[in-house]
Image: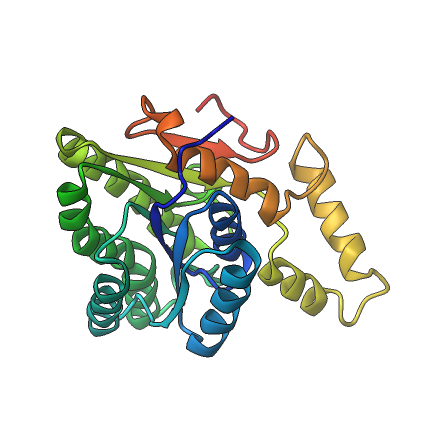
Length: 264
């Protein structure tokens, strides 16, 4: 299927590792020029150089923390200078949390709100004017299955990801007259470096290996019995970024191997 994406320009936050990097690579394979935004600017630049060389597209890396308004403003200026805006935004920056509500500080709540929610708000606000000038675009917000099916050990993550679902719905209604499609993607178990790090830490003093721990998690939770690879998930992002998904607006899509225990 020709997704008609060649020559488009995409911005991916959290783009230097995990899901974001896989999406950047998959878009570049379709001929999309990509801007990778990540806190580690050197890593973002290195990954962008590799993607550009592999796929013959323009790829840039920008060091920015999207939880900080000033960093977002600077990143948007760099995108404007390099691309003149963007056709696609993948708002993906984020990370898990680990706390109880009673013990978590205001500062921790605020950080995750700024990272997950305000990062998406600010990047969207900054790129939509150029999308309007271009005649439309696509925005994909990475939320999580935890937005609807919370994990007990990360209430802040659960709450901010649920807020992202509502934000994406509201934004979708606001900008669809401009031919800008906004959708939310809720992944389940995806084998990112964060999961491997967590598994290694939790099994450091046990007889169980990290791989055994991950296999156990998958078999207990996902009917499919395994984690997704970031590359596997990325293919869905690519389709949803394209005009082949032209009637997909304001929805939340669970890509979770059957983990969600209710009818969405």
